[in-house]
Image (cartoon, rainbow over all chains, first blue to last red; front, side, top):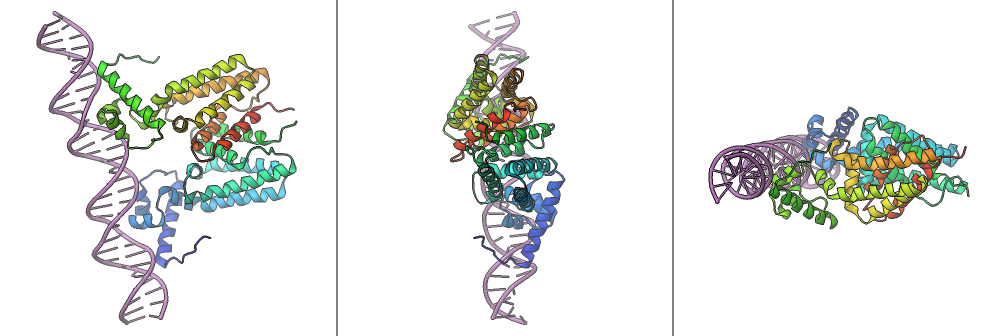
Length: 189
Length: 189
DNA sequence: ACAAAATATGGAGACAGTTTCCGTTTGTCA
DNA sequence: TGACAAACGGAAACTGTCTCCATATTTTGT
């Protein structure tokens, strides 16, 4: 599906430089400097930046793709080793905990999830599919309600990601997760 | 507190024209046309627009203020006539139902809630205070858990508002509310 | 009723960030 | 090594935001 195209040597080099510098900048909290500056600081031309990453969101997605994939992998791992509801709870707790110290990731996810559109949302889809599988596991197991789907959980996470970074939000982020976890439990008849 | 300043006649007229045109545009789904164009279409100059509404969000807030206040009033009314948890549930259901057919309001709220930048967020604070009171009522009554605060619920609503308008989101919006309502119940020991 | 003072107007233009375009450079392959 | 394709850089065009101030309207005092 994903058309692997062999990139020319200098192209790959520039792309990597861009990515490395962007990662560094994001990590130090600079989310909204001029888009052009990502190019300048990485030592490449503006055109090159745009050729590799047509939008700010595309750049952010590329930077965090690996990290996001790792988190998803962890989710699957939890699913394999714990009962579904506990796995889901652990996953969500870990997720929020990670977001709290990686604001750039939170911002990026907030954007990706809000992006109704196109191609670059598939970082978000990767996450949604992990959650869907966790839910399914819990439904089979009988511990998770069967009347809500992963999309609903994604909305909640979206809210959490957006709020992340606001002073004093940590407690409410945890609160939202608490609500989500207990709200997902199959209700006693 | 709110400094009521007598507005000059033409000023009030222009302000109203702006508001009316903006309401009409929002209702027809045009959220992101040039900000300047709101002025042009309302038949006033750019300066006038900026004088009355310094930002896009300020304009949106003014447009929806009345509507939002009505929703909050309804929340208080529910609180007065139903047990707290039921009032909260009815409020949230009604809220989402309303959002679903008023996308402009949803967008506006999403923005207001995300904006920690105070002055224009007090539409958001009005909402938060209604929810806080509903929660408090339920805690006293013993039906709502006491370990999460209104901020957590606001995050969830933020996610819902952001998602509103995406095709097929309605079911998940309802799902998120379902999770929230059940997640807020005091857990049996 | 009128003039002075106070208030508000409009829209040209400065500005900042974004994006395109194309002449030049660099890498690839035979 | 030459020819061709791929990628580069960065100046210039563009787009939306916002400010400024000479001009116009309203209010107030007499």
